[in-house]
Amino acid sequence: MEKVVKISQRIKYINLPDNFFVEGKELKRSTDTDIVIICTGTQGEPNAALSKISRGVHKEVKIRHDDKIVFASSAIPGNWEGVERVTNSLLKQGCSIVDRSVNPKIHASGHASKIELEWMIDLFKPDYFFPIHGETKMLVEHKKIGVAAGIKEENIFILNNGGRLRLENGIVTKDGGVHAEDIFVDETSLSGQSHKVIQDRLVMSKNGMVTITVGVDAKENKIIINPKFSSKGIMRERNNAKLISLVENEVLIALQKFYKETQKITYSALKSTIKIAVEQVIFEHKKINPIVTPIIMTLGEELEDPKIKPKPVQNNRHNNRNGQQKRNHNNNRSDNKNRSDNKNKSDNKNNNRPDKKRHDKKQGNKKFEGNKNTSKPTENKKWK
Image (spheres, rainbow, N blue to C red):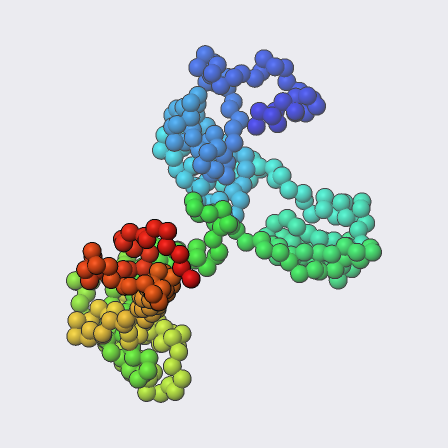
């Protein structure tokens, strides 16, 4: 706002001397009847000056009972809630408000009129025309102005967000599009979340979530644990035992019918059957459409039903690994023993010549073991 005023002064669009303008901190020393405050916030922006004034949190401006607020604007579609919130806050503080409902001429639009749009087309005389500003109905009206000005209808393009045009050799054609959806950034990731994730969050916040847990035998194609109901954000389960029992029973009937009539059983088909049964009952009694999450446990997993306790599946990979390690260890011991025996035999062979006695008289029957020969060597004895 301050920048716009300074530029307007420099180009003499606002032709007023500098002493006509005062700083915010000087308002307390000025007479109220001599002050006009120009500020932002007529579209209900939370951080704009007018919104802060309406909430009483502005540092320099406070509302008084005899103040008059002029909304020299028209609310942009989609901003009605914010504008009404600011208006109500101002009125509660006792001031009066003047807007287009009081005087339709209070606001001069910042958008070009139909005649001005015609002038622009007549000035540039384009071969191709691409309206880009406003809602679809506004783009269509702008297209009509182009056709009336002499542009061929096939050379006028109205695209959705992300639409793309190719300009090549003086010819303009449509060229697919790019991803242009809103990006919802989580605190842990800057890549953003898809619209599907955000939609699921909105549904859960309004309608809650239902979880149905069921156990099935994938080989025999039969139910081994009856459906179990659990919910968040829908109802207090202990006060709705009848409804919960009804949901579980309807799911059971639907699954039994599915197994009876379906030849090829798939997890996606099972989940779809459960979802349809739950959604019908919940909507009939609660008039809401919660997120339904089926949990299907197959035989062999750790089931929570105390009546069915499947045998724990041994980890063959772990056992095989242990067995392999044990065999390797035994083989290593066997190899080491063989090498030691061979070494001992070799040493005994070298020490025990054919004409040498294996027992010494002094040592009695003590046996020599390998190179651990404790007998005293014979001095000056030559071997042939």
